[in-house]
Length: 314
Image (cartoon, rainbow, N blue to C red; front, side, top):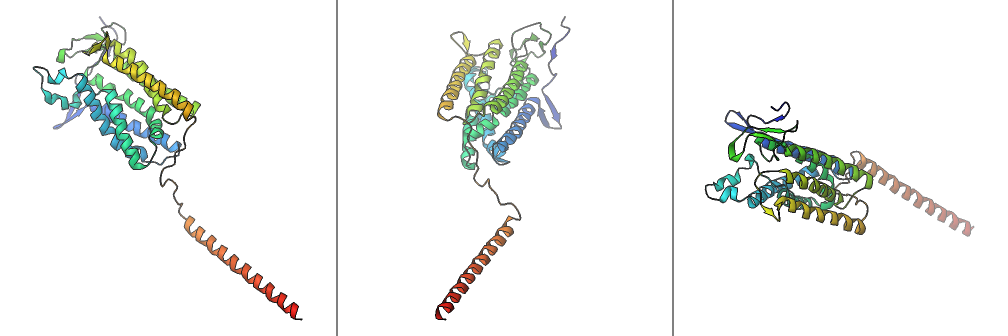
């Protein structure tokens, strides 16, 4: 008999009349708000303007959701397109299934479009939002808890996750709460990026690359613990290989970028320097004073010339 465990919610959706309120969606939405809020504070501290992060997020978030869903559907296509499956389910994002690799890749494309439209450097923007993305992932992983999905091997540790649903091939029992492991890991990644950014003045995309590399390390061992169906290559799950490749790319970028462009770039947005109310009258007054001084000086010179001419005649 298990004396301690993490209970699963009896259901992952509540209804407000005919409107379904899904825990999975709430976790994603809260995560986005946290990422934008923290990213905005960090962007302003770097010299940017308030509101820029939110404006670019309008592009990045939809692209990220589409990318995350595409990655999941492509890598687990048999869940939607094999015999006996309904392909319409591929569009049911609220039931779970967002691949972080696709979300980051296509989300970065959306952010790049938004950054170009706003006229800001994409690497600096990525550095500002990096820890916020990690915290958003930490919150978003609790959506898997609401859906009773993506758990690990069977275990009897005190913090085991109690799965009660038998839908979709689930077997009720006690399993490693990999959603919790990844949530805690992402919090640690966010804290690491904030500390390293302050300590080493990371710039030119290196704070974002550090987030990516650190996340990949955790995703590697957490992915190894999961028991849900996945494609395997040479004995390793596909996401393990993806984490390894992305980790190497991120570390390589940090090393090369540190040599080519050390330090942190200055962020100066177009139109960031605004006139302070009251300055315009003061400037006009100063200009009038300057003109008056010039007229006065010219009058004195003319008076001196007339006095000199009178002396010569005498």
